[in-house]
Length: 311
Image (tube, rainbow, N blue to C red; front, side, top):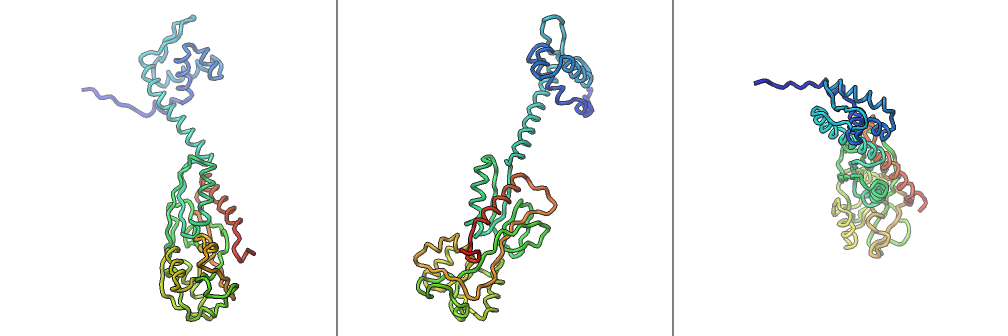
């Protein structure tokens, strides 16, 4: 039984413009009308069809001459059938590239609780308003040693020890959140926290660094409860279990300033603020969507006014 051997040389000799010319001739019936439709001269169309016929090794059109329309040969029917599929795929590719350049596509963003509540909603909303077809994937983790991995962007409260570039978004000052009436209005001396019951985040991310700063300031609070969930932590503050020292973004994101059961105080002396950064992989070409997300995040952060910025 004879076997059919297909080589790739034929494909490399066929150009999309040859197939587009062939499709136009088949639909219009004459070389002249096909040329007018594509904006070519008739001789250019003839040259493209001739190049196609050389590539496939036979005629793709019967040319009866005169006013009669050309007709596909059996070989031409095979070539055009497959050619239309190639043209459709090329058009889909061009459309996908255009949409990508315009900001569509997928973006994977790593985030954490405070940014998720205050900064990221504005970033997501504006990206979706500007690029309704974009695919935004979010993951929220707060590991001790974060890695950007396959993420396009990573928000983190500090610098990431990875092969990344970064943009500092803002300084996030620490505030004291207490049950209403626990402390007089206004700033609270840091020494007042010495021996006081406190609820706190687990010892991950910037939390150990903050607690060390409190200790260096001369106060050793009694940590009576730890949780990574802000709502749970603040519920314990309302219940009178203890006060909490939290970054301003967490305070704002949880709606504490409008909560009549809680009071917010600056500390004197103030603690060094935590720093919020946005990271992306160094040396990697960023998509238009990622570049736009960085710009929006910077704009949103610049519009925030934590106490250290004069609020």
